[in-house]
Image 1 (tube, rainbow over the protein chains, first blue to last red):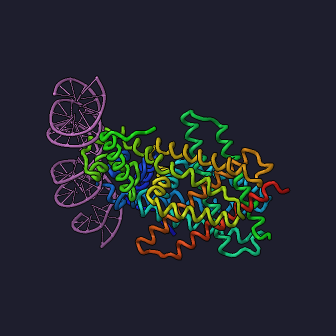
Image 2: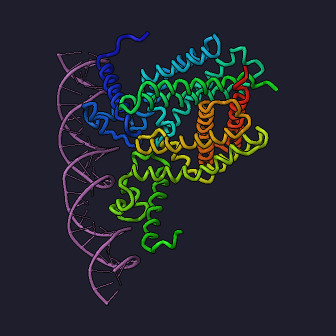
Image 3: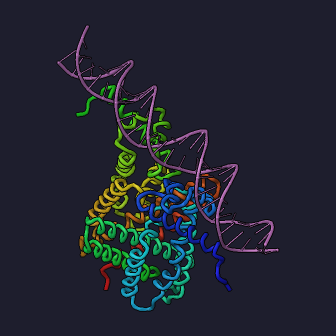
Length: 215
Length: 215
DNA sequence: AATTACGGAGAACAGTTGTTAACTGGATGA
DNA sequence: TCATCCAGTTAACAACTGTTCTCCGTAATT
């Protein structure tokens, strides 16, 4: 279906990706709204004007970063919620999966956490849309579970939003622990503390879920 | 104890406050890390160099804004969790209190939500510290409740963090709804949808809390 | 083989930024 | 009343920003 890219388009995509990577790196200690176009091109080693061949503006690049950062999550999300074993096992697996994802893509996680409420409107909207899709995916997965019997669509969406938010909070905590570890301010104990905190919070939520239709 | 401020110190505090207010206003559509010193002084109508009489840097001003934005919340938090009535009434009151706070101080709420994971480290740390104090206050309030019998200190802190995070998520949703309303993209129905979503999420959490020690 | 398309370079533009130094004028305290 | 203090001003600095226009070399197309 897709034959080999022309050597021209290949080069273009290569520098485009280099721009995205450089931007993500520079965003380690600043927000998107202060990221300069020249700053990015300088980091890549390309003329400032070349930027316009790929993105209309920094905000545009930001939106592209949202796709890159959140696009790969969809599959993972589904497998996280799906597994059929006991609740505790499922929670442990979810927390572990989040931790692994943060370790695999720390810059992506930081970017999403930072720009979700950041100063660039189009990027905020892109993140909100993607997270909304996540929540709907989670809802349809939750609906498969026999425990969802008697639940209204609305309540399922309420729960899935809770899960998605909780996932982000946990991811952000992992990231913090990771950074503290890198700069020597903390150790593996802190990471374990995050694991136990997140695990118990998810357990409390799943208990609430179990008794939602009780009285 | 505090006699009338000298007309000199009074003027100083006045322009200092003007700087804080102007900064908060300018942060409506950008992040702190892109806020310029000159931008702020220009908005106040004062020379750029006057800035240094009050703050060492923009980051320093940001930390001051954290105190201003979160300092007033402590009392409110306590009264929110404390009320002795039924769970549903308590939840309704909490959600209403958050909504009122967002309407009263929208810029403060946006600032905290934005800079909690923002690009300026000292500000992030200040927010983290303040929120940590909140969580501890909430924990000691929760400990008074007879429902907390048998709970470990650790579990109570876990729950209070859940409450604090949930409060922020809800506040941010209210803010979003408010802004959508202002720009005509949405109406009061959206605001009501947020109320119902937040209410049910808090209800699910409180159900989980009730059955935490069950089996 | 000749022509077009196009990613990138180069130079220049008007503005902007943070920070420095030396200065001013009115409140403060002796 | 007089000397001191100090919030705010003025002027200047080198460095930086986004954006435009023109040009170049090479891959793609004919």
